[in-house]
Length: 238
Image (cartoon, rainbow, N blue to C red):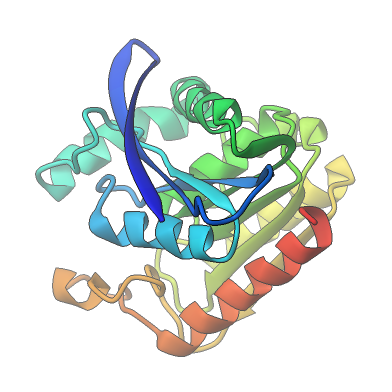
């Protein structure tokens, strides 16, 4: 397995993401962009990229804050994410630049691309789809579903999967219903899977240590949602 830090610029900022590929395999393969949780690019996200590479994909764990480092504290995180929630132009620019990095790797088949994301990274993945990017599949895990530009859903080319915990305190039923209306009105091939007993950050074993109500790891949902993603990849990337 080859792991390589790649420096690139996006939205006027120096980014450092991590590319992972299995060099023991030959030929071009599908590429998966991995969008990190709100706090930043951590070892957890890098392990997800490595897991995908082990399954035969080429994976790029993008950076959307800068310098490949997580932000220092939660207040800093919310200050960064708030403007992108109000206007997704900046986060789309950063995500599309990362997608270009993935697309440019010699092992990657540019006709078989997907994007996945966690927490605000899931929101980012959905904004990639709304931008009209040429990706086959987009997946969000405990991702915010709201957007300031729901009308852009008509641009979506990908098949969309979102995996949400039924007890997630920041993605209430009203947000899920609005997302459903958005997808239906745009004629998107979409699916929303709702998992009982799961809250926010259900894929991250470190979530419990944050001490935030409704944020906790849920092993069964982590496993089931991963399998749902693989099912979509088998449908779109082979």
